[in-house]
Image 1 (spheres, rainbow, N blue to C red):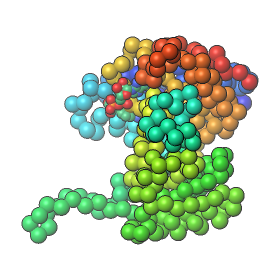
Image 2 (cartoon, protein in one colour):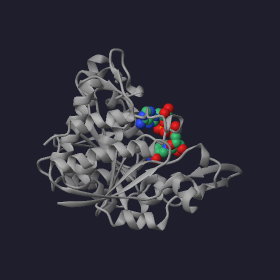
Image 3 (cartoon, protein in one colour):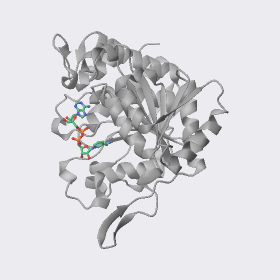
Image 4 (cartoon, rainbow, N blue to C red):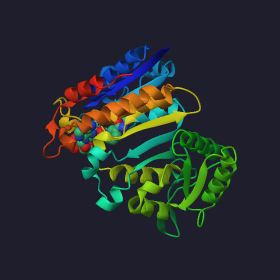
Length: 359
Ligand code: NAD
């Protein structure tokens, strides 16, 4: 099998963490006897400096021509004063739009090796945490029209429109049910149907889609309750599916309770290939170029790329196991350092994960 991947290193720690992610991908391909072609394209501040735009047309074309896109991070203080439409982050929004990515998948897993970093009470953390938030990414109140600021009855008002059509709900629900089939076969749909019409339609359509997946157990929670349950007993969740604004908040909540920003991967998927895979964190300009960044979120994004982007679940599992093995051996980058552990840099962490990848 041959696959083609477009690499977007971006800014700050981007190039150094992506280098480790790519080494890991190459090793996974090599041990399973497949061929990987990688091409690198410009995005973010690096693209702005080189060609005057954060998302050059050539980058869009190269991404569209690939089987998956592997992105590190964009942005930094150097470009903070630039006009809004040319800011590095526009490159990120632009590529998501150009690839039609409507589903954002963010796993939150508490690895036993890092249980001490968890922000929850030990008795709750002991029950485990292994869930994935499937968030709709292109609709909802963030994009609904009309929106704006005006003056009514002499008072300033701000207004936005929460809106979903049934097709938008159906396609994200299918992503959630398909994801659940590869996991513990449970979907929890989160909305606010006791108050919002949009949510009533959401619930109705999710229930319709559920009929196509008789093996998956569907439950429903109001968003306020879901936010509470996530800290009270996150072990009850497998796949959470929700709209854009609720997902924005819940995915941050779910991931931060694991305690390790440097370990959180994500995937954004559309109706067709390619998907985009990236760590949740930003470009960390404060530590760029010092070989101290944690590459594990990027390496775990490579595992998601293998599983969801290329349909290579065995290779994905190899990468995830290798990460766990290195953590079990007590190696830590600075951000997740613990007493008694061995401190390693970005490169050494990547090399150690590579060394554990075997068929
Ligand atoms: P950040 O995630 O870059 O950094 C927050 C803190 O976490 C910093 O102290 C940083 O050193 C640390 N950190 C982040 N990733 C780390 C890693 N892999 N290993 C060790 N420590 C790590 O967020 P920020 O400081 O708010 O933003 C910095 C820049 O990144 C900004 O320009 C912002 O716009 C951009 N950003 C980009 C993305 C993206 O590309 N997806 C996401 C968020 C922020």
